[in-house]
Amino acid sequence: MSERLFDHDPVSGMTTWHSYDEETDTTFFRYEQDTSAILDHNKEMQAEGFDKRSDMWHAAKIPNVIIMEWLTKHGVRFWDKNHTEGVKRLLNSDEYRHLRTNHFII
Image (cartoon, rainbow, N blue to C red; front, side, top):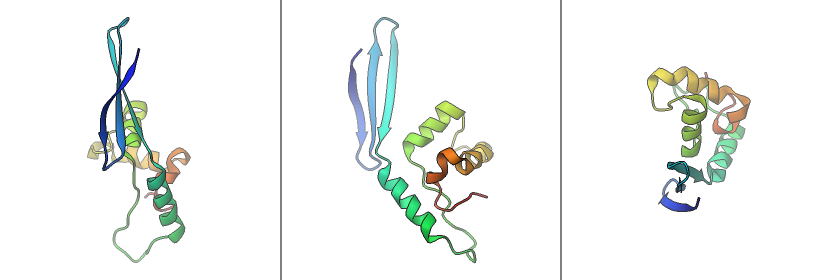
């Protein structure tokens, strides 16, 4: 089974790879993205804190590969308002703490 480049988005840095298994007649897509710049930015924002007097504040910056992971691993659709509690649960978890731009999500 060989893998080939399917798509690359230079804006998001998301790369999609395609492979096909002839034995099982199955197609696979694999996604990858360099998330280091996003995570570094989030850590900087956490260190700065936020203005508690503001009515709104930036809660998180989530890379596309993580949105895909949430969908496939946890069944949480980031864009679906019916999944708001699942998004909050994941953002408040230790596993995804570096996605937050604050130390907690309400």
